[in-house]
Image 1 (cartoon, rainbow, N blue to C red):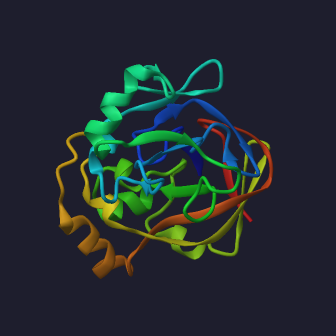
Image 2 (image 1 turned 120 degrees about the vertical axis):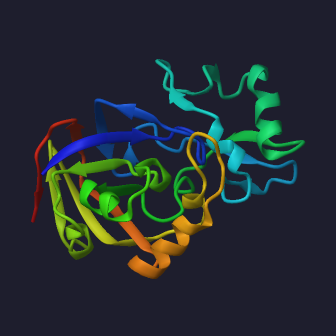
Length: 211
């Protein structure tokens, strides 16, 4: 098996960026989920309830700060776009350490699993897409370890999926049938919740070994 894709999402619930290599630390991919969206009352908003956020593209600038559609996350130029996507008063806020992730800091998906599901892999928002994996082999990986590049990754469990999988990554049109199929055919779980045991760099094409 090999690393087929690497994804980083500098702003929670926005479209991410493809990488050719990444540094995996104890909090996942460096630069992942640095910023989130809040309303005026301080409530965290995600694409579960505000899917238009998925139409905004987040990248990481050379200064290590997130960009949204090319603008630095804390610049006035992006404020209107955030409010159009998430409502009046919505704003971007930097995550506190330990608050960036819903579950564990790394999500891994295999090409075999996404082929079995038959949807755009971006609906599942993986950090690492593992290629050359046969069928649903990932479902037997919880409790095991993966080694790739210089990193060692622990696999905790299959990831429970939510309504975010129903939104098209490009148009944000909703198809409830996607989640219905994940529930009916895959027990509501697809991809893997993982953590980093030993930090290190990983690149596209690196071998992935299951231990």
